[in-house]
Image 1 (cartoon, chains in turn cyan, red):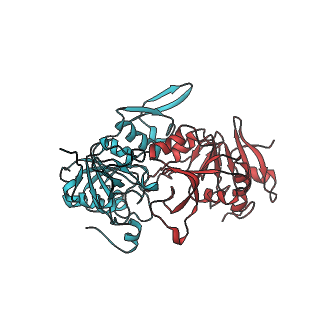
Image 2 (spheres, rainbow over the protein chains, first blue to last red):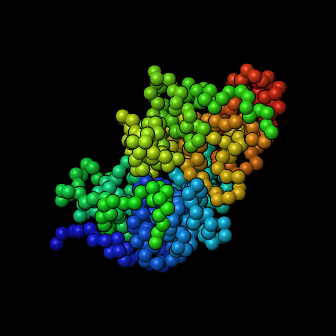
Image 3 (cartoon, each protein chain N blue to C red):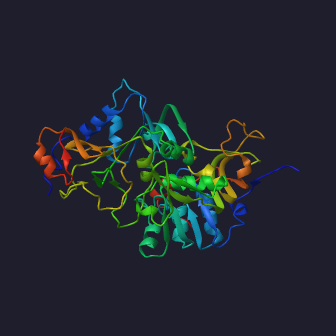
Length: 237
Length: 215
């Protein structure tokens, strides 16, 4: 038997998602955002989801659409404000969605540390600000640090450039962002790639995410470009 | 109406003063908005490496119409370019560059700065709170420069004894560049480094709530 993590469709890879799941979404703005997997998540109709991502979606595409379908109860992110954000803004202003604001570097490190088996860490970021209130402070070498706990998820939805059948991933430019660390921090990592590596295995020197961190991969060869889709007035579903 | 908003140095002049401060070979993170102007004024005899916190080191100018790539963007989510010697990394590595003390200078906007170097620039307490990477940059970068108008649009002082808005960081700002003056943050408070020619010290002090040490 050969290992094969490649699946035929978005529907096939989304089959295990459940109500109340904690789900990480890769991407920084639209770059690296797994839009087609998020649309697959919308199709599952799963609700009461907690979403961990850098942003809170734009327009009614991808995360903006998922929030608009009222499937999300809480967003953990660093920057939920954006000129093209509609759905999050509306629910937040009506107290229908929770928000946990996390400094971007702390968010990245909380995810990375979860993937590395580290339950928490101390950082100077946010000391003396409202975001450190109620958290343990410890002094190292005369400086104050705040305790931050790691962030795990049930699922991570990831966008990458290529995969082979082992789930070894490469990325494209700044679409890498949160994707590699989210792959490490979830019980099940689901990936959409633009193409399958032509050779049976990817050049080991080029692999950014080793396959051990990946469970399911499917191909979306011509993914939606979020900003263009929004400008064209496209929505989902 | 605020009579002090249109006097003193223009934004480009402030940007040039900041650009002149970076030594050759510096690693620099420029905040979104007014600080982005700084890169236009770096002397060609120097090579400066720009960091964008979404995983881009060696950022080049904005992309023009025929090279737009929505997977090559900056922290403001606008398409940019990458220069020779540049690299991509994931978010935890990118913020290790910041939080690990590897960035030489960051330049940020401000709503308020206190004489002790406290910075408030992320929320007025109203609307959706959104912090991005500001809290990481202010504790991690070796030099934290604020680039800002000297007063608010309605003429209220921005450089205060104590900030009234929620903080981004405590005792983090090292220097302030405004349209009226350059102020160093010292253990005794704001210290005047340079002042624009159109005003005198008494006027500068009048539009600054915190006391300024003149020499």
